[in-house]
Image 1 (cartoon, rainbow, N blue to C red):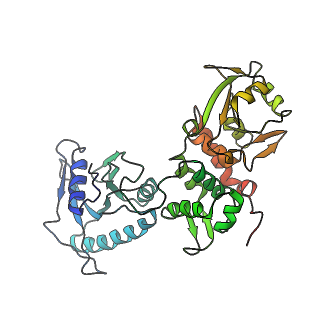
Image 2: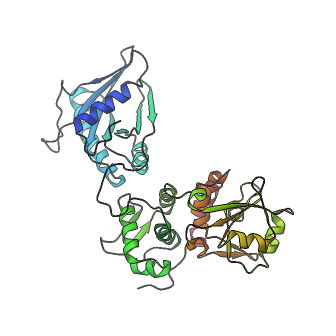
Image 3: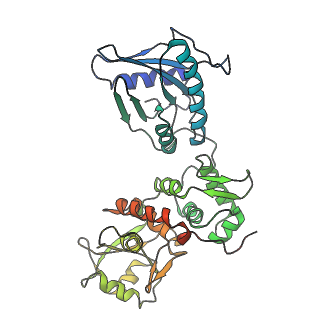
Length: 376
């Protein structure tokens, strides 16, 4: 697909039609009918349909497709507006032609959340990075391809990803605390700079993950589930941290007995941390954040294990992995929000365990969401 810094609407349409047409069954046709008819919106006589396509099978069964084109990336918050525009144009089209067309959006780039909302609204889509979802009931067609999950086009956002310790520290704060709170309040709680919090929030506001009462006002809501998925795009447990594998010959039970007596700074994450809240399957691999894996291994009596280890000692991407930890039965566990992220992109059955833990978190927000120690 096209990846230019600017792509005209005509080229976007032509490329999308070509990509979809190439994936249709033999003898099926995708026709451009814009040259035959010019349909204008009843609300705005200057607003016309960008394109009218027709999908036709070999037996002559066909459906019209009302296409909206955006030459700039479409943010999730704009999906409702796009849907309204398409419905207004569709209403006029139905009166003129006595047909029930379907909707499609073509754009330079559509983020994962934008695509999710379009799919829920029943709107097909295509973007210039190769993301396509094209669904028609009559005749029955389903085409879906995967393109980019990150915007390849330059924009004015001061922060482009959530990679690194400073961004991760802010994200953990946004996940952990009950709203509302101000930028400086969150900065004090997380030992972050107000400037860094503003940069992270600016990135997230565009996707409606963070909502403020005004441009410079307090943060009034955080969609923690969507924020977790967004952070997982830039955070990977095995890649973002430094992992070393060890063996406790007597089993993980002996390891936890030692942890109850140790003076080490540590926090348990991964399967064992999730199991105590949302049991899924008996865990076998213990994952611990520690400052120095070699020193911790010696203190805990662990043996090096290139293969077959039952303990992972992890040097964290940032000390926030130890912060706001929880004690349970003499064991220190990482904050549930950190555990969730570690499982989402973790090894083995981690992603499935993350789904179970996320379900527990949805039902128990009052148990894990924290209040600010001070408010203004």
